[in-house]
Amino acid sequence: MIDIQGLTKSYGSFHALRELNMKVNKGSVFGFVGPNGAGKSTTMSILATLLAPTSGSAKVDGLEVTEHPKEIRRRIGYMPDFFGVYDQFKTTEYLHFYGASYGIPRQERDKLIPQLLELVNLSDKKDFYVDSLSRGMKQRLCLARCLVHEPDLLILDEPASGLDPRARIEMREILKELKSMGKTILISSHILPELAEMVDEIGVIENGRMVAQGKVQEIQDRLRVKRVLHIRLLGPVEEAAGFLRDQPHVASVFAGEDGLHVQFSGQDAEQAELLKEMAVRGFGVIAFNEAQTNLEDVFLEITRGGPAE
Image 1 (spheres, one colour):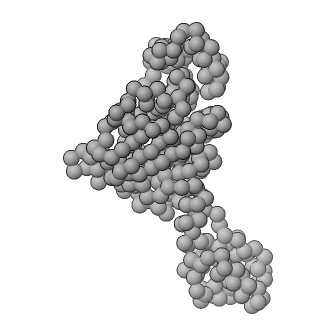
Image 2 (cartoon, rainbow, N blue to C red):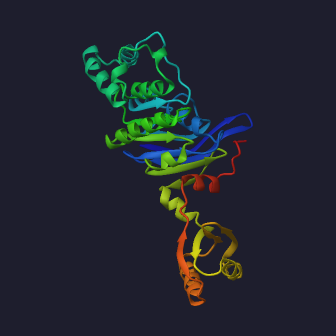
Image 3 (cartoon, helix red, strand yellow):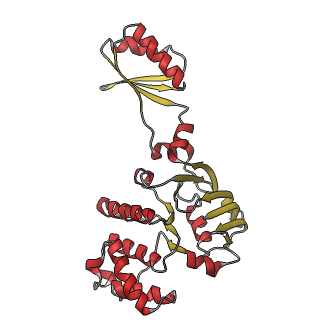
């Protein structure tokens, strides 16, 4: 659905994107993560035909964005990180306005808009003025606006930005529903644990370059060079800690209230050997497990947090 090759966007000596490569498969949900200023919004603006690239190629459903902007706008629903609403409109009037802008006949809009309001949990607000809605409701209304012309691809730039926990949960459930409907979704977010629950793949961008792309678990496995082992013991903790500090692949040992935390660079075979040796020495191991990494761990491991230069 999305195919980006060598995409570059420069403003004089400032490079917002540098030879960016990215692919998003049809029907998948792709999480786009990176520090502020890394190039996420720039990429999305180019895909939405709102910004021209300096060089490189960006295609949506096989169409080059710079050559077929009208066709691409029919295929996408774009929700920017900052968006305006027409406060003097009621929610239904707001959606009718955008539906009419896409040339959707009134009769079709009359059927479609109640369905969209139900999807985003705003049916009870159909006669409310937009300026009376909470921020979370406005976010959901904007999402409904993106769906009014039934696009195949949704480009959502920080859709949960600034929302309280309940509103974020509501937004997440709506996105899960859209995923089940077969929509392709490109979504950027800083709420990484929630993003991990719904995405099929992630792409991590830094300084305008894609530094990692793939399934969340694959990237986590690739980054597990330094594992953290959690060990609980019946025997003397200090003696076990001293033993562990002398072992190969052990970088550090920290004794906490819940046991020993060991930074370990070995693989599965070395872990098994370490556990066997501790059992032979009679340390009384009652728990030996590897701490699970999450999407935030991946993000912090990959990025250095600098903006594009």
